[in-house]
Image 1 (cartoon, rainbow, N blue to C red):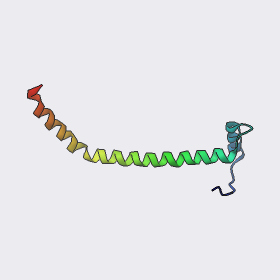
Image 2 (spheres, one colour):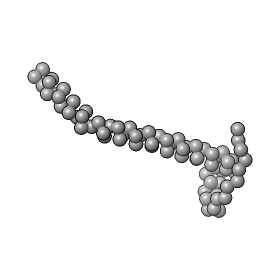
Image 3 (cartoon, one colour):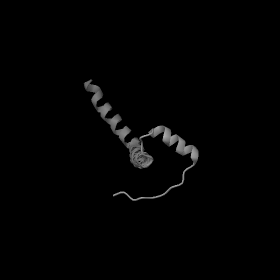
Image 4 (cartoon, helix red, strand yellow):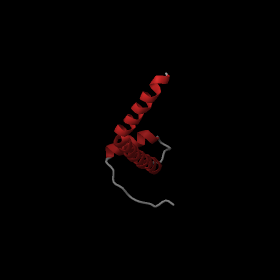
Length: 77
């Protein structure tokens, strides 16, 4: 469901939008897509940041495990 709203944008920004969408484009559709992309990218970055924090917090333990495995395998290589 779409809800009509009103926003105020600067003239230079509107010129940029109009150039991007062309004569047959829709400002509303373009702005909606840009905002949707922004929120999706923001959510993805938050997930990646959380994953990186989890990996970083476990890095020392995981590196130690790898060292142990390599040390164990060394005689068989």
